[in-house]
Image (cartoon, rainbow, N blue to C red):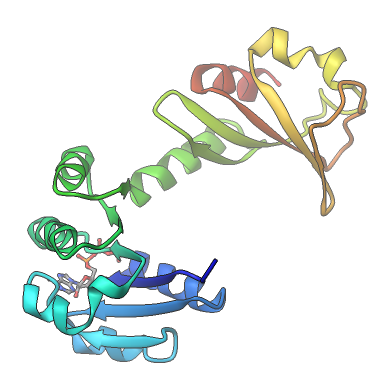
Length: 218
Ligand code: ATP
């Protein structure tokens, strides 16, 4: 399969981070912003960096936006520009549009005008930090849906030297330990008899309420 090509519109902190990561990973990525200074800052970090107003249909055509497999709309503050851009991208036949939303209403509108995926970076980061604040053992948390998530949980003193079957996590909390990370090794699908050690990290999937209980009580 040919490698995908990406375009990122809006080079604020979020868009810039997406551009940098894709470029470092070896993908073709075009960085677009209406602000020339922002464009200049990305000349090295992108395959192409171009100045264009993404609410101008002709400008989008001129940069060949329809040729990219995935376009990321990373405009935040100017909600109107983010919505109009998404709509134009859809009309120009972009196959996959990923858009950043400021809030749930903004997100709903983005879906309505054609976004294939909407991301809420500030909200998601807030959730991750909050999980870690409530329980310092929680190293990371990713929401899979409003109800389900995946947590990365450091093995607590209470868990050390015990096996998953002894801890009875599934029956007690209704969550599943899908992997155990020891140093840099991943044990995926760990057996119930594996003894947990200090420094191990559990990757746990479950309902958010169950995960919260697990995080608090373990
Ligand atoms: P972050 O939180 O990621 O830093 P933000 O949510 O504050 O970003 P903005 O600063 O609103 O996002 O926008 C990000 C970038 O999008 C800015 O560099 C801005 O110049 C650019 N931008 C805004 N409107 C347009 C537009 N119509 N066309 C192209 N770029 C745009």
